[in-house]
Amino acid sequence: MEDISAIIPLITEIMRPVEQIPCGTLVKDVMEKFQREPALLTIPVVEQDRFIGTINRKTLFIEHLGRPFAVDLYSRKPISQLLPENQFSVEPEMDINATLAALLEVDPALTTDSFPVVKDGICLGIVAVSDLMMKVSSCQATLFDTLKLLSSRISEEVAKASIIQRDLLPPSEHADSNITISAELITSSEIGGDFYDYFPLPEDRFGLLVADVSGHGVHAGMVTTAAKASLHTLINQGITTPGALLSGMNNAILATAKQSLLMTCLVAVIDSPKKTVTLANAGHNFPYIFRSEPGHLDRIEEVAGYPLGFEKDFDYKECSAGFSTGDVLFLYTDGIIECVNSEDKEFGYERMEKILSRAGSCSPLELRKLLKISAEEFCGSTSFEDDVTMLVAASTGNI
Image (cartoon, rainbow, N blue to C red; front, side):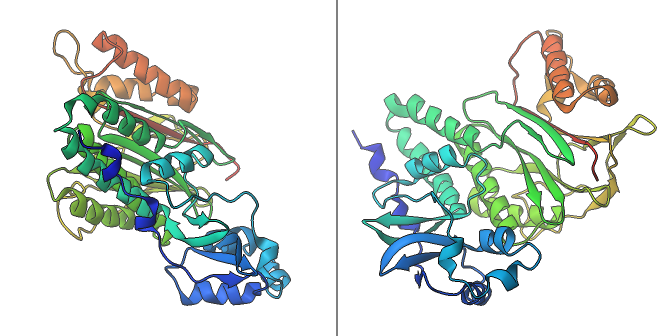
């Protein structure tokens, strides 16, 4: 029987060689190097030719130099003073699945954008997390084709893929000074075609996403993984508007699925200082906003476009709406609308909107649970025929 582990690539296959710098290199020189090389994410630092850590572009410019007077304070200091402790690294013998599992264990939110491959005190190269996720996605498709010939192993490997896919989701609950989020994905099969994500953006903005692939199983999971990878690659490149994010994800999914699978997707960006939310829609269900004043529910139907993976370089339009303290945004997939009862009647929009109209008296978590319980009671079952995803985001003040 073919050894499945033999078809899983080692991490060295996606490792990028990167020029190392001495630990005494001045911070200003490191800044200039990053500015000269826009694609450079992380630089290895050595002391007497021995690897002692890495300096990351995002960490340097945002965490260290983003504060007032920080550039003047640090520019002539050695870069060794800014090296973080306990950095994540892997050995070259690790395969991509083991690497992703190890990374998720220490960084479940995947805030890391790159990490070093280290052996015996020497940095062999740097791996971009976006490259890792794309490789895992591609490997899943190859693995599925192989598993068709190895029927006794299918259940085990699909279960592993399901765990990886679920681990790629952010936590179901999030709260900060501006926004409170409650989200849930209920899959109808071991590997679903829905996914959600949320992510902080510059200038005190916050991004939200809900998506639905036209299908289930490993190939649908492959598309969701590619979508997640492309999303965070785009964000790391400074692309943060809903329309541009959808356009970039569209081309990535088209390259992955070759129009065999499509994905509907909605991206919303909440701008807390401006008290607005901006949306772009790729063939997805229209979102809702509950207005705390005067206390009514709006369905946002101003923009819509082709599903992702349908037409290359499609231009996704945006619309903006007010989003004040106490307002609630609801994103979802059609699984909750289309769940049916014993009489083959759908739960439908009217029932959902009636519950959403109570958003003013519920927390996001309470509203999400109320929707789920209502759908389960209507269907007479705790499982659904299609994936169900719900994301509730409330503006909570200090904005």
